[in-house]
Length: 324
Image (cartoon, rainbow, N blue to C red; front, side):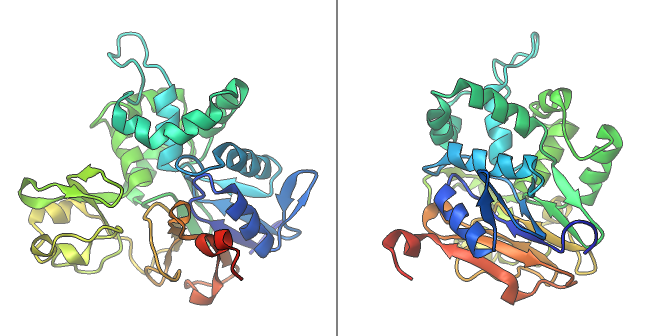
């Protein structure tokens, strides 16, 4: 490590679990001074998805934004921040879009808690939307990289060339609402990851009740042969699908992040069980905190390989029950 901080604490998807976040920060040695959590020689890095689903979204946003603005933390945008911003942004004249994200029942269901908890706070709504627009999509240092869902070097290189930095602007936001555009594809890949279509036109019903025609996939699988080799989501594939061979088109849709690449930290994927590396150089830190799983951090120092002993977490269900 170099510069002001001796280490970094990377924190997975909060989703409005402000009390769990405070417990995790305290467990990591952060203390609250003048209303802002900080550490004497470490910096937190949030992997996005602060909003939606949880009981204390507004409190979570204030806590994290205060840390970022004070220099005690950094953050990258999650797909839920992007969705919220797009849902609240009107389309431009002649675009044919009333809002950049359609106000339909499915989108409302996902965003409902955020919209309700901010409904009586119009100034917060404006401030948080401006803040989200300014969030980086990704971070890269000499030792490690951070992105919400997937590090696609091709898309990141194109983005850097186009934007001269790691943030979107208002024009990029509006272009990203056009399905199939380069901007839409970049946001989809970095914030939602790689995915494959369920073969034969089949539809899966996920645990949260959504009908899905695509499933989330690993972007670190070496020489995969079958669908089961690449699936990475809480909902298992039907057995007859899992054992089907990948097609040539599937291989074209997948990307690969090799073990020779820098350490990479991602959220997004609703893992369960005890936190552990998903690859020697990749840690996923989303362990379903808002569904009574774990709010997880990784304590990064100078290592070049993800160390299973350096995951730190709050077990949300045990904390609610008051267990040790």
